[in-house]
Amino acid sequence: MGSDRHYREERAAHQVTLGPFEIEKTEVTNAEFAKFVAETNYVTTAEQDLDPQDYPGVPAYLLKAGSMVFAQPPDPVDTNDFRKWWRYVAGANWQHP
Image (cartoon, rainbow, N blue to C red; front, side):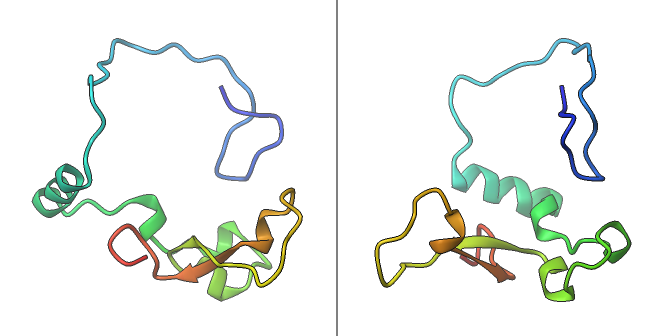
């Protein structure tokens, strides 16, 4: 598990042992997830601002919780460069795309 090329909050490649776990037969629907959030006040990692101490030199606006959203490019783009059709939007999440 892990990678030898990793961010500070991630770990290098290492061996792990997993205990027993279950996998549901079907995926969780948006409605089921919304109910879970409402009942538990769960906040995903993606909805939390990042700690500037963990990311020195990163502009403050990129440390705000948000998400990448599709942005229609005006012209054909190099498909090897995802930055041409995605943009970061602070505050974007599963409830507010």
